[in-house]
Image 1 (tube, rainbow, N blue to C red):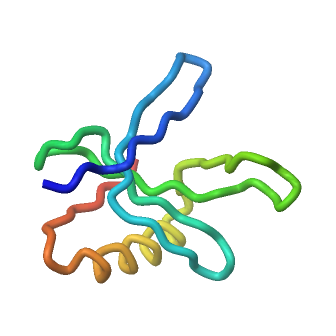
Image 2: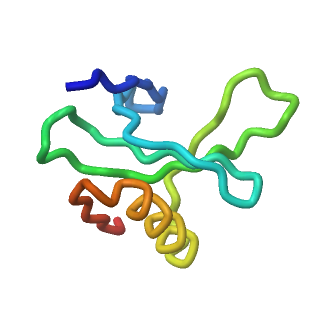
Length: 90
């Protein structure tokens, strides 16, 4: 099994660790598909980079717009066509 890249997000409640499943750029915006575990029963989330070119580090937020979410989820589903992925909106 290939080891996944871990990323950590700092929140008001503390640090949250996610595992990068896939990444892509759509219309100049970077998106990450991440999971909260390396297990097969992990929850998946889609984040987008909202930082600008002057920032040293990327800033990611969860995709909440339903139209954007559906479009990006479709792209990731095609990228992972050999993996069963079910996306749920919060």
